[in-house]
Length: 431
Image 1 (cartoon, rainbow, N blue to C red):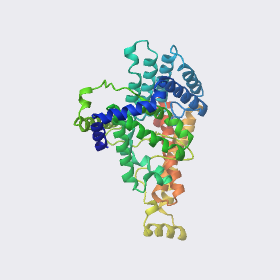
Image 2 (image 1 turned 90 degrees about the vertical axis):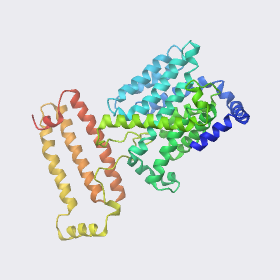
Image 3 (image 1 turned 60 degrees about the horizontal axis):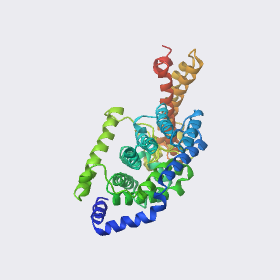
Image 4 (image 1 turned 180 degrees about the vertical axis):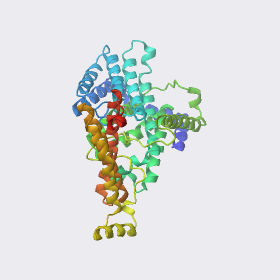
């Protein structure tokens, strides 16, 4: 990608580069002349679409049981078609992100923040009567998508196991490469093309066209819901590809030289990855506790396509040795207790006491939540035993799904108790 950027910039500095840009301008003229209308229609259509999906915040990946959130999305959609109400729609978008903080980790919502701020910023700048403000309206969209792509690309290095079920389910995505080679390569490509959106006109437009092809290629295999989730990104990429602007407002002298490209890419890598891992350390500590997956390049939840990290300490499973399997089979045949059976029983015994203590709480709502926390933890522990000893691919996938979803629900229930000043552990013990 670095070679591509340098070669593109070398062409761009020549007369041929200006000819290429002029040709791209001519092709995109009809869209460029109505670009604001295009952006507003797409924003409105996106919020109507997630209103129709129902039960989500900013994308189908971020789910909520609050029905009124959908009606707020419909108001946002209507508000984008008048300059007077566009700032209110912008405020509504930021409000949706803040509401999502009730149910999701702040760290894993930061790429959504970049995109949300970009769209909200566009609405504010586009509705402004100040020409100096308005001229930056497409630029803020470009920065938002660029930061979101670079940030989310690092998840392929931080949480590669989130993507394992995806490449198992759809192996054609890897083009025959091993998953541990393909996933980092995809992360590198996503980061560098996100960086390309911030550079000179020809580099950013060609990066946008490449990204548009990649995102569109994912629509058919992943379906319409995935298309809705990526609709704003895809639309902004189209805007970048159609943008006739030659002006460079940020570091124009630096971006003019060929030597600045590797320097700029290295600086972006240090800044974004430093921020990512620094905040990861601040949120989760040196041990980097495992967290539920919020995104797979789309942070998706789909009960028909379970995803998520495997349990720690997983699994001889599919590649377990024949000696281990033979010992387990022998124990079953002779009536002896297998190691898996012993661990399943231990998880039940561990769960039973706290669950019974929890449901004895005098407040029915609190009793329900306390009992469910212990019940969910028991299910997680059983799923980890399955991953340790089980070999059936379907059951292993189900176990991964149980761990991911029930860990997330435990976090939600613990937050509910914490908001009411109740410590889950002491309350379950009747203290």
